[in-house]
Amino acid sequence: ETGVTQTPRHLVMGMTNKKSLKCEQHLGHNAMYWYKQSAKKPLELMFVYNFKEQTENNSVPSRFSPECPNSSHLFLHLHTLQPEDSALYLCASSQVGNSMNTEAFFGQGTRLTVV
Amino acid sequence: AQSVAQPEDQVNVAEGNPLTVKCTYSVSGNPYLFWYVQYPNRGLQFLLKYITGDNLVKGSYGFEAEFNKSQTSFHLKKPSALVSDSALYFCAVRDRGSQAGTALIFGKGTTLSVSS
Image 1 (cartoon, chains in turn orange, green):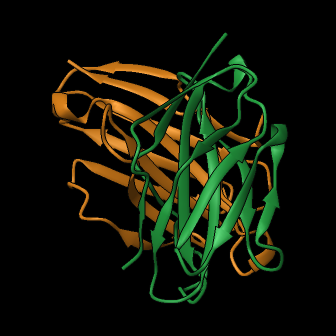
Image 2 (cartoon, chains in turn green, brown; image 1 turned 120 degrees about the vertical axis):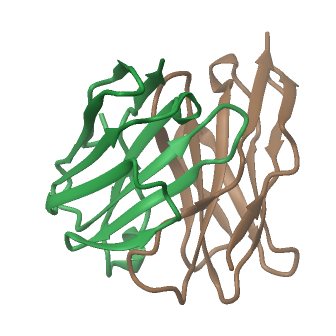
């Protein structure tokens, strides 16, 4: 709907598993973001990529590892997660350098459950 | 540092009545301001933004918001609420002077419940 597609929509993983979340944007944007949304907590910014370069890492544990191979794709690699990492993970994109169109567009999110 | 406050966890209104969802912000410079809506198990949908110009901004689905610099507020309003407006609403800010590509900072969200 918004031009940002996230897969999978739902993921259940054990604490010893390794999995990856994928995000793809079809809007021609050059910045991409990962946010974490937990119940009853504000949206937490995790990572920011501008022009494929990571420009922000908000003290995210190393069990979360982002990858941005090009300006259209963003991954979040997960390993040895904890149950408290269960949340909705949202990807967003925006256009850097265009102040009039500075809003971010979000994907539908991946609902992650760690068991 | 940038921050956004949404003082109400929940707002309840009757269908047909006007609604207001409050937002105040704090930035070191001038702000870009945004409202987003989230329906259950969905991502955030952009509603409207204030960049420059008129303080009253009109957006999607009949929503509008008024930028008030002296009160550092950007309250979301709609003249006549619909049951289908029931959702979670987020206010967001970015400092106009911040580095290009700096991410939006979001409030904690306000649940709007419209009763028939």
